[in-house]
Length: 217
Image (tube, rainbow, N blue to C red; front, side):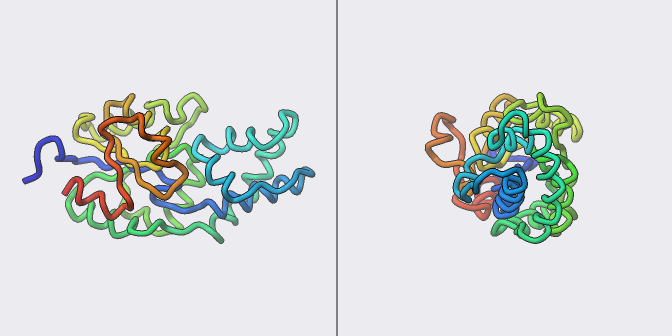
């Protein structure tokens, strides 16, 4: 039997860079929007390092203040088709979710993405059938690293923080987990780097999602 500190009943996942690779879709939508408004192209690398705080703050970073509202409208209009065309599952995401459900674990997604796009991605990539709840911010004040959505997830399942773990690819995920008093796991390969998260002592690092069950088996 796993030690008490490793026994988890709720596995909460970030979405982008953790379960799903939608960077190409984001890049396509951003650069389409920039072309429409007379801006130059942004590189894939810059896009990948800039996501994670919701689409409003993402768009705000790449447009003049007077263009943000229009840019967000264009971006969102384009993004549905872009996600359908380019988004992919991250390796081991589907097998991991299947195994967690076979072990009768609760599985949730907490993402800074708007709910409509989060649910679209999960349906399109056939991950939704293994997920018990999806929580996204309704107000900008609720986005991670604010722990609001993680605490809401705990309340939904009536689960104590020590029984949960939050798995993500960025420092904001680990910060949200810390504030919610939930164990955090950093998964490499997404938008964050080891350098970004090294200040979070005691946080486990997974080279891929395949490591999660080894950590909490």
